[in-house]
Length: 517
Image (cartoon, rainbow, N blue to C red):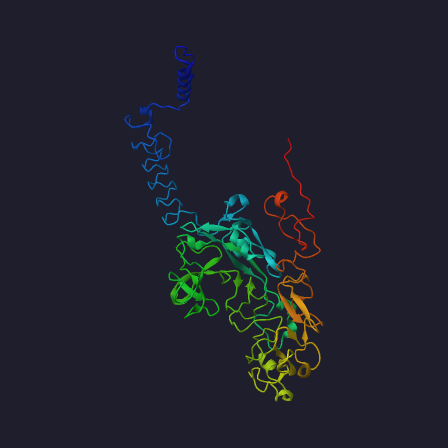
């Protein structure tokens, strides 16, 4: 019912207040206390913790809260006063009472970017592969590498295939408010350019040494710091030793499939929680130790390197194939395919070149007086040009005398008899500097060079240093700048120098789009 607001007997100001009061009453803004179930003696102007000066419908008679009946002033009904409904008092909703900031016990599954809260990245449904692979292709669906994610859906994160520091842009706060960044983690690896199991020696004709000199294809995303959440141990998936760093789990080595001992570095694995392991991990029985959450790719970081020899899949220190990731002495080096000659010998292939180390290290009768007299005869043979810049140590490789080591890194052997000339060439005379081409786009990285001979570059190198991003074959001289940024391209472009000319997006036309009226 609408009251008639024409009470001329009152002053003008009083009439306005009275009119407003009567209108609110008609719309239910003021109720009869007897009709609300509130004790008529309750103070309705209590200025409670919510600041609303009402106690509408709580039935508790405390004049402190609005509608929850618990008397704590937050309106959630749990009695802890934080408003999240979990009863722990910390405000994060997880019930642990430890961290006042949001944490993640697992990846957040999503369908679109709308499902990803600010700060958790974008909805990634497909992950680019470092280079085209026969198994992974150019990209791999998240549902293929993270079992448990429905087909067509993804997780809130970012990819870190090109640059692992991308993960530093995503953080969650520790209990003391310190930002903790996400971690770049390899979650899929492609084909190995080395047969497994290996056939009988020799099989070097089955290997592509250009392919061997490149890192194994991989896909990687940013993993949230699960260790901040009370569902996981403090050093979840962190580095550890037998004595420290993994008191709540087990410090494990993937190259030996056994716990780390002494000063050995391992990975801290947590016991499998009651509700299972997070995405990207599987529960695995580790003998008498019990069940633990193990990363599907057996790495918690940006490089899958089980034996810690700096070779592997991902952002590893050295870009080349590791043909035996459980033996730190075995790996391929495109700049020295005969390594580690002749420290090891036997019917094995520690230098991953498809030839028996035994055959490579034992020379023919002709060279016995100089070197290769017996298997494992390590660099104690003839030294030529001693005391000069061209000083060299000789070695026998497949029965042919070769330079084993130049005394100076700035020298190289390019011509003449090795016993006469030694390491006679350098960058200024007779030699040439080559540059690593990790992404195989024919342009080299100016920050990684190797001295070679004019006859041609070492495997995996080129004769120019014009690449400004050797981890992405789409970024190189001659390609057009493009606008493929996150966010508003019309404002910021893609902030990438696609054509390596020192300018960013100078060829891109920006347009401002306005809605039609």
